[in-house]
Amino acid sequence: MTGSTPKARVVEKGGHHRYVPVDLLRQLPSAVWKIHDYKKSEGVFNSFFTAEKFFSKFPWRFHFFWCNDINPNGPLILVHETYARMFIDQVQKRFPKDTRIVFPSVAEWPGLIADFKYYPGVEPQVLPDEPRSKDAFNSMRERLQAFPLHDDTAHRPELVAQLKETIEATATCLAKNKKELKVRAQAEFNKTSNEAMKKMQRALGLLPVDLQGDDPLGPLETSHPTGICPFQSPVIICVDVEAHERMKSVVTEIGIATLDTSEIQDIAPGTFGINWQDKIRTRHIRTQEYRHHVNRQFVSGCPDNFKFGVSEFVPVKELAATVATCFRPPFGASYQSSQTAALDPTAPTFKPAGTSEPKRNLILLGHDTDNDIAYLKQVGYDVSNLSNIVHVADTCTLYSALTGSRNKTRLGKILDEIDIDAWYLHNAGNDAWYTLAAAIGLAVGEREGRKFGDQPAPDASVGPKAVATPAEPQQGWSTHESAVSNAVAKDTLAVKQPQSPAPVEEEDLISFDDPEPETSSAVNSKEDDAPAVSEEDQVCNQATWIAEEESVPEARTPETVIDTRSENTQKLKEKGGFLAYMVERLEAEAKKDTHGDGK
Image (cartoon, rainbow, N blue to C red; front, top):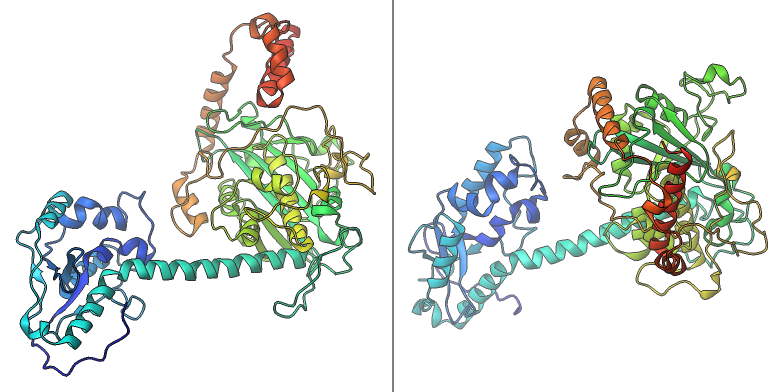
């Protein structure tokens, strides 16, 4: 683009000669207003901006400018500014409460207005017809012919230069501004995600609060305690929720993992924070009415494979109360429901809400946290009512702070990068533990100076996977302390992995069992999209699904499931991976059926 040329001294033409590019008008919702309601049949986009409605719902009068001396590559399609404002007024009347629907600012969108008042004899020409469909518009556009520049302007080089600037600015208005907006959005995203990482590091005692600006810190020595007091000494509470794959409004599992940062202050974090993993307490809460349901269609559900404690079965009516206990002392203890509390006099004493004891500061954590907040609200527990939540964190954001990517990343990929083997993902309890361990690993790894994403991989000196092996669950507190093998040596990171099925990689982050976000307010969108299910409907639906799942054929023998003596079976086992996992599962099911141990 040439440098700015001062306006030539000419007599301005009478009338109104300001035009707006059609390409920008067609993309007003996404490019200018940031309204992404494509899935709503009565939303802004589907009401005015679909290919057919844009041309048919408003009596457009299109113009075009195409002079070989100015824009030889093709016509610039325009509409008069008056028509553009009338169209936007019509959209405003249809959606009066949406304050984003305004005429674009010329200051924010340079080139938005092409003003021809300074160019004698030059004016965009009117399209010969009035197309009322996208096909008719495109067909007419192909038939357009370039026209010569009027002599009163063509013979004045300074006017020709100015006109070229005007047309080029208008023709590139959308693309140029979208690029600039993208750069600004990326910069803002980087700033937000980096601040989220710093908050997590301060909370874990990895970063001093009084660090000024971008003062450089050397790599963290993870073999010794950090010597930094966790800022506000918070309790980090990680939540993961699994829903019925066919009834999104029905919650089947809730996983809650807790880390009290006051317990790790004097402990050396270890590589990727492996030594702090022992302090994670985890609970796996299953909805009693749906205890027989397993998601199979879209994700590989595994509700029976909780590896960090003992699963708790809680009636739908008590889900909210059970979740509430996780946000009060003693954080992470197994809650006894009303059906079993009287039978267990040794159960831990929970602090009722509203006690005089000072509240602990809380950090709410999740992987794509907004989804889990929305699901908790569905079961009757609204975390936004808690005044002591000082920060809401998300492992997606923490990972983005280290990679610069704005795309949400699967939990399984993050775990692999911090050397954690993931067992039985899509079990809410396991996912909660892994998500909290991932947040710790990312925060510690960044302070160690490690690289993530497409950047160079960590040093080969890291050693084997930095996660302890889940052991058989024990009674009492559902803590990771009772689930982690005590055989991990303090002076080495080497951990012997069990002879278990190879971990199955989880599905993409946005799966069919997640509410589909349509706006920036993820919580509200989930609440609107997921209709409430009455208790009667829940019982009816539960009975229907259980009936489907329990209508299995007669007991199978090992020979009918899989020939354990066959050469093919042995080859599958030797190859390992997912096929070996399936063979072992089928053999186990066959043995259960043979001995009458099946459900």
